[in-house]
Length: 278
Image (cartoon, rainbow, N blue to C red; front, top):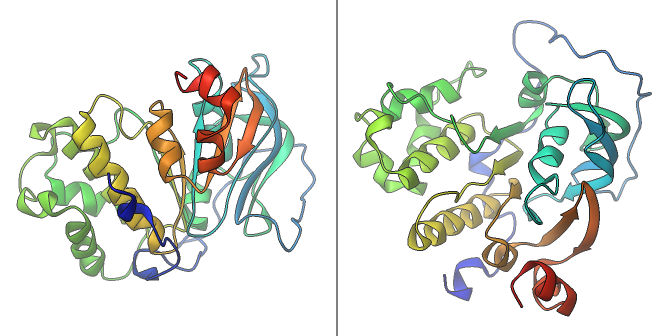
């Protein structure tokens, strides 16, 4: 990617996002929690998993006082060695595991006790690494499934997704399972964008794709951030991810080891030696 691809980011056009709204059709059931509601400081990031400790079910803690945050229209990247708790941290932010200590806040509101479904209604979208499309459905049917909470006209958003990923427009009537790995990832991201999220969370979006496809996906992720959507991303390709990141988090054994801007982490000698191959 050229440096021009990721320069001048900011809230250029909010057309892919929306103002967070409550779910249509009644109250969404929430998980039971011991957390008292917390309110963030006026200047805290738009989304923050604050001092999170927790794990899956009744198992041991995987996260240890871990903090992950992202501002509006920015890209935050979580990197680190295998088993560092990167995907676990993201799943904690999305409500997919127990946060036993700490809190998750979205736009100042404590959402620690909300289910993932309720967080989608609040404006969050999550794209898992695998099993993230309906392979037997067409590309367009996948996008339509992404709009399951909406009750308005979705055609404008579908066209915006096709503008972002032109190949999907060309293949809109083709079963998604027949697409290449990179094209499937575009379908998965496009489907998430159909919810008009305020926050887009991506778990290893470039896993298993070629370097050329990886660069293209990163370019599209930058374009999404330019619309004002916050991007929180877990990525194994640490060096390339930090190049596009406004903020980077290096995790080791479920805890924060380094936190800084993407460029600062790229030029930190210890980070380069330990995590970026020198």
